[in-house]
Image (cartoon, rainbow, N blue to C red):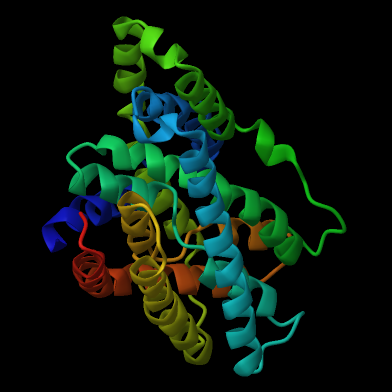
Length: 309
């Protein structure tokens, strides 16, 4: 399992190193992100959704989206309470702490992990991508409101290529039209989509390099975030996978939701909206390092408990 996660960390470190030596310049970020997120990732999503037998069930697909949304909402509530318990308040980092700690890196970290563990992804990749829509709906509504202190939800994220790709993919699968997509088109989608994971992981590493400053760690905040993100929340998700009467594939999905470190997007938004990005970056870095030890444990324990792979 440690061997399985090595390529993920190695690619992130490659992005970090490329930024440090000037191969990935900050002025190129916008262009690289456009290619990675708005072009390559939608191709990757469609490539993994077309022909996915599990997603042909409308009820299963909706349940998968609901699982992602419910899991992240519950995480927000628990991390908000834990932040209050250690004395954080609105205005001194509570919102940044709660959203960053609650939001697992459900995008490229888990996508890369599934691609490695499931030999390219298989059916699980399409299911994970569909689940991520539920996470996006919550993050860009409740998470956005918390981090930005906005009065209303921004619906701009609905115009992003990955979200459209999921909806188009579901419509094609549900209607049966996916069976008539030419093999040449599927080959193109797979070819372009193959760039998505390594490119986005390298960009992630470059952004980490930019955002990690010389500020001292707040051990009270970081240790609490580590306990919640890598201990309490994984235990909750694994317990839910064990106890809830779900499809075995969704039980595996719940275990996967327990594995990931915190995602960097909360740090990006905190920086944009005048929050506490240094808190977010410290949490992301600490949980990413801790995941090297905790991920194999929760993956092995969780999958053995629910009896699936």
